[in-house]
Length: 328
Image (tube, rainbow, N blue to C red; front, side):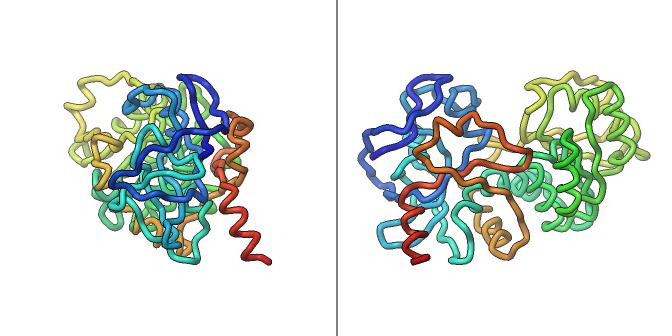
């Protein structure tokens, strides 16, 4: 088969032949669509905390494909060396989900990993209660935009969106955010966020690093009741891997910091939420912007920029041929 192949850490993948492993207990899936995300890039470079740094490899964590009996499925790759950016992939039958006919393969591929990040954080980690308020720190990317929509969908009473991209923040407001706060990267960011988000119940943090170092103490210190619980859920670290945190803050405020990701949540538990995410997509409750490009052009688009909130989706020749046949 042909696949996007990364030969060494830091290299851009090329579309070339790759030996397909024996499937064993896994199902062989004809890939239709698979998305390029920051998580996929970091895994392919060997920089993600779960990476085994084994090369060569085919990147891609998940995708939409077709089984031999014709069923379309959303699936997770069963092999961390042979991912989903290929003409064929291996899927664990327990980590595959039949798709309804009214959902686009590209939309599902683009939405699932970022959507699961906030869905699982809110339902399995912070256990959002209906009517509680949520702040999404880093709301302008695909994951953040979906987090705003998912928080509303799951019953949040108020959602505050925080990010740097002004155009993307306007879109987030259209998607349901009750307040939008633009970060400037300056010293006033902490106070600006605290002014509108000090009384939230949950923070979904996709930024961490310097942003959280500024925002967390400012937001906590402005809360009216010291004993009122604030759950701060770390999902991503786009602004840095570490924060500076005063011990006084943790002793003086009822602040609960927890992570949500691979390891904190088992793969099976994360995948268990995928049926709910697909149902929300099928019902038109979640919107995502997928930019389709051919898988064979992976080298061209691997590092190509996109506006905030859009995601490259690699579509295989098989999917394009099926669409052409359906339109004929």
